[in-house]
Image (cartoon, rainbow, N blue to C red; front, top):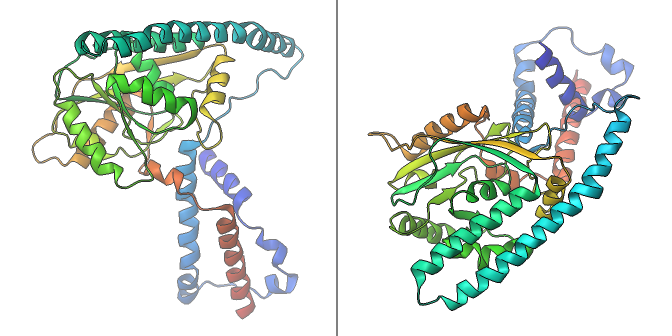
Length: 371
């Protein structure tokens, strides 16, 4: 009952205030009994209401949940202020210095190896993998990352692909620091795009643009070629296709589950006591996301490497994807929802929502006038 009350209170804030349009006469003249034709007349309205509830359950997957305030009292507020000073004035500059020093060492070693060992690809790829792992470890250190890994570590073997739930681009960094993965990732602009093209390309990563339909065929072909390569780095994919707030899992895309190889599930769960690691890319750049992590106390998470799974006889790739999602959700304690994460990028505009609310109010008023 508490959950129903909270849901109704949230819906009350969003629905149109129809009472403002009603007069006392229209309220007194409203019918006392509900007939079949009245029920048929309001069926579109009920469908709209059900759609609003569905939309609410979808948007919850992509909202940050701020922790309950704990510091607004005379005892804890001074300690909180002291913590702010420590995090921003001492820890943050120290972490920036660590990150800059790591970049200097990385670039000083990476570019000579990348350009001077062109004829020795085996050694070049091996050194580049170690350098990428080292740089990811520096990133984790800049957040004071506390990561606990469970299960056997990934190994370089053909015919396998790793899939994980997706909360932020730091998921890749946390996994990459102990094993160099080739990741399939959305193209990004700015300094992130530069790193993708010049550095992560050295470990065999594959890029795509979700707004270009022609990319799908090219990416699918590259994926099949990569998983069958003997010396290629393990392939890492985030089949949700977008960042989710680490409380839910949305539908997995079937691309990783129709490659005809072993699928190795990876479950990632962040502890939100110190910081919420969810990256809302529509509201915050990745640079500001890193700043938020670097001004927190720590990034704490658990990573579980689960048993490899194979397509069962008579099982479709979609059913295979759902079975793996069940495993990841159960291990990380995440709630499953039946929505496609790509809908996040095709949300209706506020003007369209307001127009729908206006049409709803006008239809109710028109119905009352007929009565």
